[in-house]
View 1: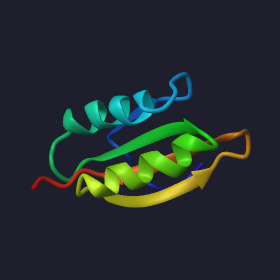
View 2: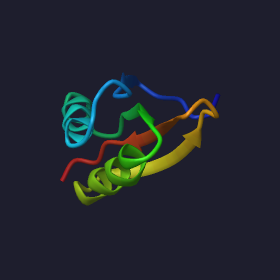
View 3: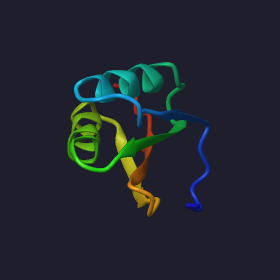
Length: 81
């Protein structure tokens, strides 16, 4: 497991694009500024699209971890505009 402390986590492995980003965005919106969200997602489209979309929203990508089971965990710090 990664050594990053997080405040909340969301599992979007059961979703497909574009719902992967929608569910991740809703989870981030519920956080306070500066809190960290761990997003568990499948390899492929989610790993390519979700980090880019979250970064485009202005949030800080801390780390993307390969869980070595076909999933990844993305750690994101919420940044208020």
